[in-house]
Length: 212
Image (tube, rainbow, N blue to C red; front, side, top):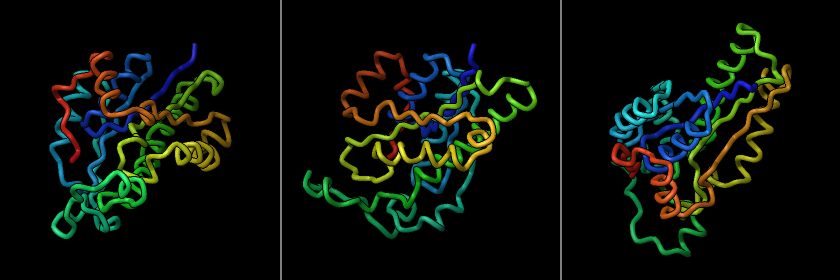
């Protein structure tokens, strides 16, 4: 029987809570990672803690507030400098990436999640003597390409490329032949679809906190 290691990037919002509930129901040995990077709504982190506890997930919260200084050109990291966009037309949303985009945020998050998951996987192989062929390593991320944000790191092609990058850049992939899987189960769903799915799964929507 395969050892199914999973990691979910859990923000505390609707989308990531739905994905975490889905992964939990699928039977993964699931670890939740919440990242504090200087975003405006730290209430999300408290929500993530409550959700992880309710879903009985192992949970890590990491503070990478320094990232705010690096990815400073965003309304989410510098709200006093940049106003949140309002009344954007559908045409604008389709063409322009808004000021709420945080430079390379999902690339950074995916790398942090992969580092933690690879550590878990290497421990299973090298300490617990799990055969690499009996191991899965899956990252769940609640990216959504249909929310009209226009973020490039919420598109399917980004995650398809990330899988190969993680394989080539990891001991897990190059020495043991275990490829990271990156699952984006709500990437093509509308917000209404996500809410329906969350209700279907019994996700703890009452604990969620919207990102912005």
